[in-house]
Image (cartoon, rainbow over all chains, first blue to last red; front, side):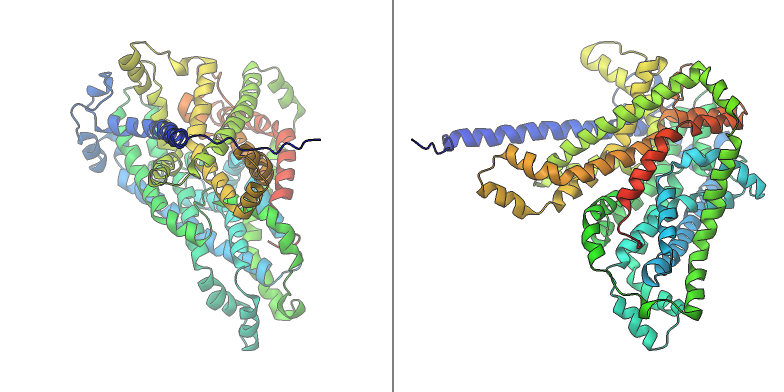
Length: 295
Length: 305
């Protein structure tokens, strides 16, 4: 009885070199396709924004004669949709910052009480947060709209702030409790022996040590609030209370469609979150997560 | 990213539960207990006022059986159900498969792969509203960039994508994939990176081929993460409002609406809020099992966050 030993086929070095080049070429081709796929709609946005009004309907792929006219119009609020552009920009900032700080405060307190103080039945809080995380926000839009009117918050920024905080806290609680596990319990205990009360432990030990998680979650909450559309649209309808997202979508109601103005507005609206995202990507990866934005 | 942490935590949960830490001196007493309650109160208040109350309110609004009879005889609703199913099933699974493949691609080393990642992540970093608006004009039949490119390169007049049911729906799905593919690729990439290198070495020692390593190391270890990602994205896709609303606008003649957009349209354009709630609530038979499975899978370990 003979035993056959499986033997690797040995090929010439040239084969391996060609094979490697072939693989590399295929990868480059795939990479090129990916870059085109990712950039095409964004290029389209810039092209329309930099086009003159006539150029939009020219049918050319490349930008013949870039003009910053549309950006000038947006920045100087020189169009009737954009009369309060900077005010609305400010509204977006207020909403974003409020949601960020409310989320950080509420979620860090909740994770402290469940993860560190071990509140009895704290698991109910965990489950409540998880459930909120997996319920689509758009499914609750209609009742929340009605409820905000019952609370008397219609057309007030606080309605959007509260609604978006509700949807940002569950993820924040989740990340905080994950991160909190890396902080030794002994710190809390020694602080208690020294006579610190829970508030002091939270404020002087828990929060400073949670700094990386706070930054990551803060970025997440700010991006969520800035990028959100549906709740902004439903809850804020007067030009005074609108945020940029709502003002931007208003262009779609127009028949004469000043596309270049619309795209210039869109770019100005999209730049802060993009910069924030890239600015904190590395930090967040080092801290705990690589991006931290809910889909 | 959120889901990486969660999904990776699923695997670690069993390990973590074995090393339970002791509570503060064996439980809370007196003033500490009051502090703990006080710290939990803000979240409890948010949850009661803005989650429980709206859910109860919604159930009350959509509790009339007649609403569902009305929906069942409404062809636009039936189309929206079909669209939602296609959107969720095709959109999520196609994207997750692509993301899984691409995570292998980005696992390669090399400076240009890293640089490409920075570009590749851009659709995710861009807010949904401007991105989908741009795609809407990109696909415009007359002046859109895509048809201009097709004309320049091949001399053909492309179709009017957003003026027909199936191509409109496909456009919405493609836009959703474009926007969220980077996110899931990064998560699956993190999952690949978490696979211990020793396992591949051990497999190599046992004579496994590349395919063998993929089939017997990568696939089994990634299966759980992949499943969680699919389920989670199904929930996200089910509730996705922006891509349909901004890319096709639900048109032509409301033929590309999904449940999330149709509900909002009934409630705010047609001013039938109860019908809108009923439209959304008709997704509950699918949503509730998904939510229960996800809650069980994402929960890090018993009793602790």
